[in-house]
Length: 195
Image 1 (tube, rainbow, N blue to C red):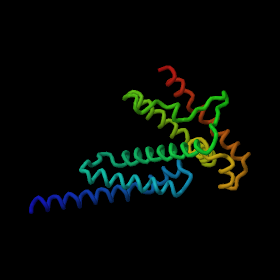
Image 2 (cartoon, rainbow, N blue to C red; image 1 turned 30 degrees about the horizontal axis):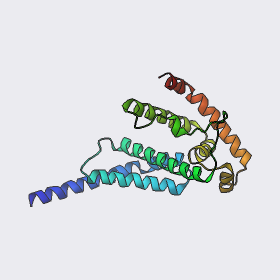
Image 3 (cartoon, one colour; image 1 turned 90 degrees about the horizontal axis):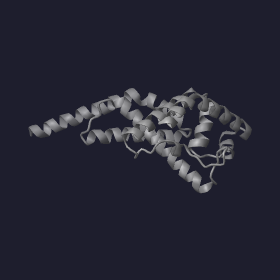
Image 4 (cartoon, one colour; image 1 turned 30 degrees about the vertical axis):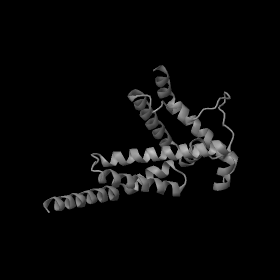
């Protein structure tokens, strides 16, 4: 009987910890996701996925020490998963996009593989964080069109239809975003190329 009471008490403690973390971080986490995900439905799905995973981790008796950092890391991973899924869908329905040099190049191909060992995983996380920071510096309109076109795979025609903004305006916004990102990320890119 004592064991059952202790288990019940531990479950109540876990429930309270989960509830506190969700209440404390919900709005910050939602804003973090919404800055990176244009579709409000997708953003809400990611938010719910993060909370679901938090509950699952606690139920598996693996409490998280730094809950806030953990939730933001899970959110970033879910956003990346969404971008990959959207990119795969876009690749199936559209011809390959080419760089100025005529090469096919996706963001995913530029980052080190997560399976290439601890150094590559670290480099990937540093590059991802720098990209996130650089994207956060962009005005909302530029960030949204860059993410929607480059990471989610929407065409400018689709974006214009969805938003009511002309294709030329969207192209201009993306152009300014790319210029900022190139300038902002040049130093880290140069450092990465050296190693």
